Amino acid sequence: MILADKNAVIYGAGGTIGSAMAEGFAAEGANCFLVGRTAATLDAVAARIRARGGRAETAVVDVFDAAAVADHADAVVEKAGSLDISVNVIAQTSIFQPLIDISVTDFAKAMSDLVTSQLLTTKAAARHMIAQKSGVILFFGGSDPTSKVAGLGNVQVGFDAVEGLRRQWAAELGPHGVRVVSLLTGGIPESFPDIPETEAARQGMHEATLLGRAASRADVGHVAAFVASEHGRSLTATQVNISCGAVGD
Figure 1 (cartoon, rainbow, N blue to C red):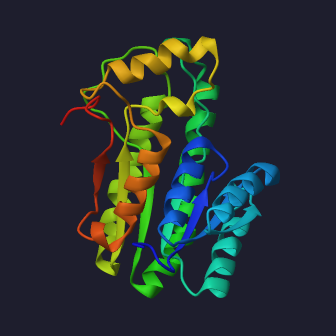
Figure 2: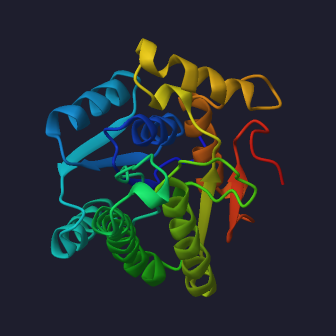
């Protein structure tokens, strides 16, 4: 197992993408610490992991509470001995409207929440990773400079903001042996509710790829586990493209 005895903290582990990463890490031997806002959702993910022989613990933590986030990271290290992988996939508040129609207040609040969440969770992990001179921090979403899709509102802007953080974190943490990588996706159809209203959007994701299929939850978990492992030890300060060709280089 490529993540045997590694300790991974997944913020937003109850969601579609967070649970995919947690399950991918656990399948490769990692101890998974699942963090989110809803105990029942986290418990369901933990139960799936344990049913497959994996290890998972849950914690309800407010990612906007700096002390709570830091205390949880400290508790993980105290219990497990290290914090090897940290990923924050707390969903941003997505406003799919033309920018001209979005209020400044709503836009600023959504962006502030996204950046604040990412900063607090990454800072909490980075303190321990610097001390142990190792670790991997993963971001999800990625930046697509070729995008010409109108009406995305704050969504791609938010991904770009996170990528700016990723570049800076990689520069500052690299000398300490800590890697920082994003997974670039053209969209994961399974992240949309399986209802008739989203069918066209989900189908569009598949059609936009070169392979005729978009990445799945399982793909996200497999690639995240690879990147976080020693097999991906040369990867940092970059995006790993899992868009199936929807986003070109």
